[in-house]
Length: 222
Image 1: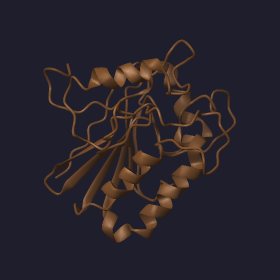
Image 2 (image 1 turned 180 degrees about the vertical axis):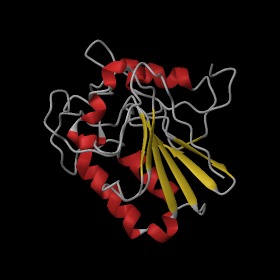
Image 3 (image 1 turned 45 degrees about the horizontal axis):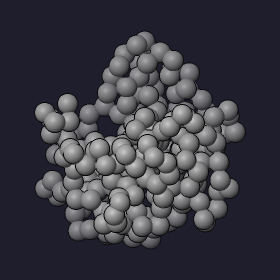
Image 4 (image 1 turned 90 degrees about the vertical axis):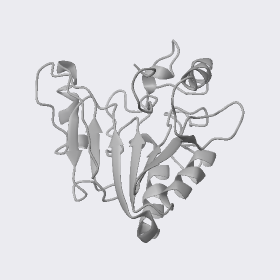
């Protein structure tokens, strides 16, 4: 599919796990091999100049819109169960600096593409600490929010698009209390995910239409 159709692929937990589990520490052989393999396909302008590459974070511009794809499955990422403080990182220091620079580029519209969900609280439910979710890296998430707010005039309009949550939905800027910008979830839904989408940390934003729908999201920019 990647060889035949235009598009840039966003890496997910299914690309970077070994026998220990899908959301374990990404600093492993599987992640390194996967990064190398995906270089065989199309990608935007990579932000990582190191060798070997630590992550496939990239950007591209279409008209007045800058698309910024972050790579949370990079080998700089801290383990999910590490204490959440200023030393715990989802993106890694190099990617975070690159991300900030991309947000300040002159295009008036920025679209951030990420594997995992941006919104949510660490609820303490089983599996939360093992999942590489932004709520497990809240210190860095808050730093990103503060940067966006301090530089709002240069950042311009911003939309965050993610997958991983297994459902199709959207949150208006007012619904997103983590930064105040629209968030879209564009991921396939399946019956077993119906309950997942109704737990408190995600309500009332995301909804699945029910059944084995296998719907995906598509967002157009004009």
